[in-house]
Length: 255
Image (cartoon, rainbow, N blue to C red; front, side, top):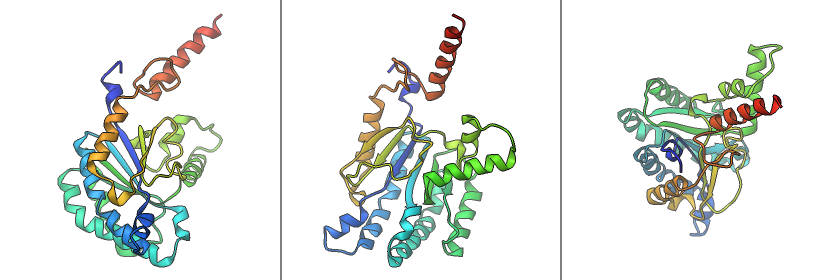
């Protein structure tokens, strides 16, 4: 790469997939895989922090997951609450800025209150930006963002910058690296706007067996790639590529 900025891994997003299949392969109910998978999260958050990642977004529960059996959904609710109770002090100690994006209205009130309390406590922290996508759908985020802009800016055309400012958590920016565990090769309605220029990595490892070591190896693999954002040579970010394109268009327009 041509600059140190190219090597900076700012935002990693992970689709934590394979819990149910991992459990069924061992003749256990699917919820057992979710329980085991929830125990992996802390080590990956720590690994991301250790690697200097600025933002980590984890796909915990999608809008489509509401169609799963009620017992499985309830277990996921309980695991989210248990994780927050267990990790609250570590999140605060490490100055992690925590947010949940998505529709959490169907969560139990005590879990919603716990989320709100941690978000409020950590909102000014400048460490890792940790985001859980729960009850989340990428298309819904885009629709909500557009509707929010229209409501607040009637009659004004919507620009890319406007759109980005209306996303659920605009400060985390575009995704640099999207990891999906479990062997499937899909984005599954996840951060559709933010992953436009993300590097994609699909791991065969199911989430309950995903390790900090594998995460670190994937990050190292990312940093060896040359990112061009449509240019012919490496550039530091999509914004730089856009500036170059605008400059070229201006020159071409004068001929």
